[in-house]
Amino acid sequence: MGYKVAVVGATGNVGHEILNILDERKFPVSDVVALASARSVGKEVSFGDADIKVQDLAKFDFKGVDIVLSSPGAKVSAEFSPIAAKAGAVVIDNTSHFRMEEDVPLVVPEVNPQDVAWHTKRGIIANPNCSTIQMVVALKPLHDAAKIKRVVVSTYQSVSGGGKAAMDELFNQTRHFYMNDKTESEVFPKQISFNVIPQIDKFMDDNSTKEEWKMTVETQKIMGDSSIKVIANCVRVPVFIGHSEMVNVEFENPMSAKDAMKAWKKAPGVTVIDLDSDLGFVTPAEIAGEDDVFISRIREDNTVENGLNFWCVSDNLRKGAALNAVQIAEVLVNKYMKAAA
Image 1 (cartoon, rainbow, N blue to C red):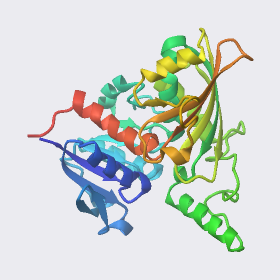
Image 2 (image 1 turned 60 degrees about the vertical axis):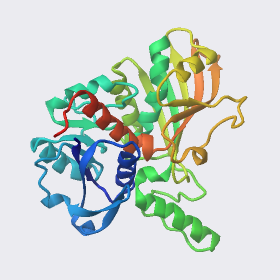
Image 3 (image 1 turned 90 degrees about the vertical axis):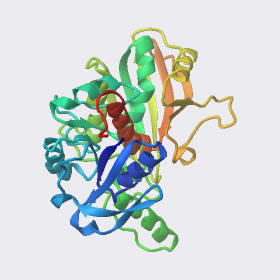
Image 4 (image 1 turned 135 degrees about the vertical axis):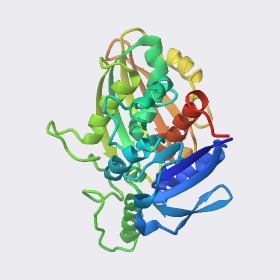
C-alpha cells in the first residue's frame, strides 16, 4: 500500500530536497513522478537508488495522483496546482501564491497540524515562507506558555532562498573578486559577495519589502492569533545555505530565559544550544542538512516588561521548504487519507 506522489519543480533545489527527504523518511509511496518545464523533459533526478526521468508538467494528467508536492514558482503553481486538485490530488504548495487565501490552510506541523483538516476546501495546502517557518517553530512553545504580544525579528537569509541562479551569482562574484575581475549583479539588486543587502523581494508602499510583510501576516495566520504584532527586517547575506534570525519577543506574562529553555527542550523540531555547551552558539555553516530549528544566544530583555532575545538558525532548503512540505504530507496520510491497496 502506498501513495502516488508527483513532485513539481523536481529539477530545482527544493525539488531535489523533497525527493531526498521522501526517501530518507520512508514516505509510503507506490510511485513517484518528477515534473518540470519542457526544457527539462528527459533529464533524470534521483529518488533513493532509482533515477526518474522528468516529465512535462504542461502535458501531465494528474488523474490517479494522490499527493502533489509543488515548488515550481508562484506563476506556474497558480496555473497547475488547481488543475491537480481538480483531478483529485491534494497539493502541498511551496510557493507564495496561495498562502494568504482564506480557504487554504498555511501549515507548520509543529505549530498547527490541525489545520491540515481543511485541505478539503480547495485541495491545496500552503507551505509558508522559509523565514516564517523557523521563527514560528521557535515561537509556538513560548506563546503557549506566556502569550506573545510583539515580535521584532532581523533575518540574515542565505542566497539559496533565491534559487540556483542566486547561488551561482554568489559563487561567480566571489570567484571574480579573487581573480580581480569585474563582478556583475543580475539576480540581486547589488553585489552579494562580501556584502549584505537589506532587500528581499520587492518594496511595498510602506517601504517594507514583501518578505517582511510575509513574515508578519503568515505568523499571525499560522499561530491563529491576529493580535500578535510582528515587525521584520529581512537581509540577504553571502551564505549559501541556512537562514539566521535574531528574535526579540515581548510577552503578556513573565518568561525568563530558563523558562524558555525548558519550553523549547520539550518542543518538537527544536534543538537548544546552551552557551555552556561545546558549541556555545550555532551558525548556518554548522546546520546545513539538519532538520531542526537551532536556538542559542538566549537572554532576557530588561528594556521591556517580559522580554526575551534569542538567535535561531535553520536549513532553509530542508525545514524552510522541502522537509516542512513532506511533514505536512505525513500528517495528511496519517490522519486524513487512505492509501490505495
